[in-house]
Image (cartoon, rainbow, N blue to C red):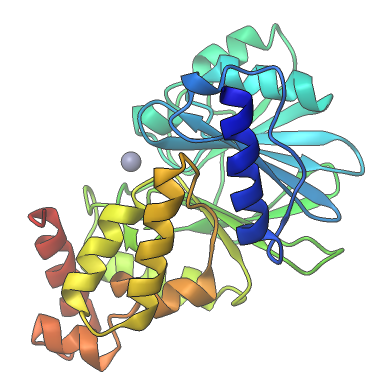
Amino acid sequence: MIRRRTLTRLAVLRSVFKKAFRISSVPTGINISSFHSLPVTFQLPEMKIRLIPALQDNYMYLLIDEETRQCAAVDPVEPKKILDAVKEEHVNLTTVLTTHHHWDHAGGNVELVKLFNGGKLEVYGGDDRIGALTRIVTHGETLQVGKLSIQCLFTPCHTLGHMCYFIQDEGSEQPAVFTGDTLFIGGCGRFFEGKPEQMYTALVEILGKLPANTRVFCGHEYTVANLKFAAHVEPNNIAVKQKASWAQSQRDNGLPTIPSLISEELEFNPFMRVGDPAVQSYAKSRDPIKVMGFLREEKNSFS
Ligand SMILES: [Zn+2]
């Protein structure tokens, strides 16, 4: 039964992602019912990204350098699932990339290091509240996982130490970015510790200026709810409508809505569109930072 459902889901996935990423496989030997979405793998010439659903709606990732078989885990809140995936992929885990200190992202770091049995693991992040941290990284710094260069992008607001990680696949020129709880598909994280101007810098001046074909791998599966709010802000935005109906059908099939593209986010994510007249008219302001603050307040009470 699960096998047949898996095959149907795979067929849907392949048609959706064919041009973006080659879906290499649904991992074998795992109990699919223990995940909130189907775990899938995205294959590029020089790197592979394995999406591993965690908790209720979180996403962890394995980032694999195909040449050296070294890999990094992004926000490994459920370490056993990460180590199972590492074993299945026959790769060497060398690095942990932590987006921010919240427990549902960084809460597995200490256990992962312990389970790693004395092996050398670099644990990076932008905040000293992150467990098992070996080094605080800063904006613009480049980290190495095998031959992959990972650029750290400091995006404080959701928390004051939030870091995103950007990777360019040289073989295909298809970059990817891990955005944690800063940028979600169709939305953004709550401003727990920061101000609207910081989220403006993060979304518009940093993430919004990445190459248009950058794939966005975020920290939660919130897409359907985010796009309901986007449709409320911009009822006439066709891109919002199309993405919302696609996202709903993905979820109906138990499939992730990850990744999106930066170019798509610029079309349907209201928080990245604070300079657009339609979004400004909803917020009754032409000041993009005021619009950002207004949208977040509205979204906090939107249902
Ligand atoms: Zn968070």
